[in-house]
Length: 188
Length: 83
Image 1: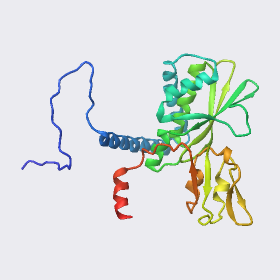
Image 2: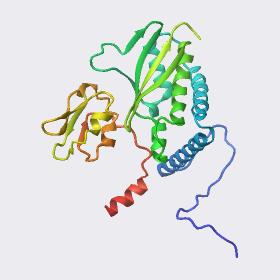
Image 3: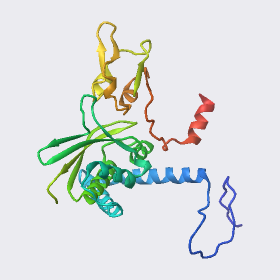
Image 4: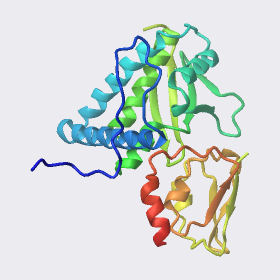
């Protein structure tokens, strides 16, 4: 007797032929949701295992991966040494899934603080796929996956502005995370 | 601008939000032994206070509510039928 896997959903059958530019990907919103959750679980498990095997080195590995991505993404946009314009371009690079704003305490007049050859700006990340992945998989924030975003941000800023930068975590929360971006003027 | 409301009947005065807030938005009202909002302008709506509050005593209004794509709607649907 032939064995059949039982499924609730009915299999969709159709025709397929090679196409130059695909115009449909198939699936509905529920499929996207399920795919997203599966990916979140996979990435979360990978991050957790990486931390287990490599310890604190996991952060450096993931940071480097993110930084490389950031540099690649930064090549797509116009170069500038204007911080505000760079933040606008960073926003376009990171997209709506990493919705961020510049932030300052109420008693501070400017978003940027000059400190010798450094410019410091606080960024608040409101929407973040990394945070959502961590919450989906029950992992704590500030772990290796967060370093992917730090690397991505730093890499993109370095590429756009042609300078060196670093990102530090000030605070992480379930709805927003505050980070400090430090830009070191004087080239790489 | 962020508006924070504290439900004084629910607040148990544990002070967790005071300790957890990075921007010193809250202080303890020693007389009432409840949390009070003293620095609303510096609230960045991270909602760490919501996560730590054991009494769910606070509400933030007019904030950017981050997407919660991690929520499993199937599980939520089942839970809603039970609870």
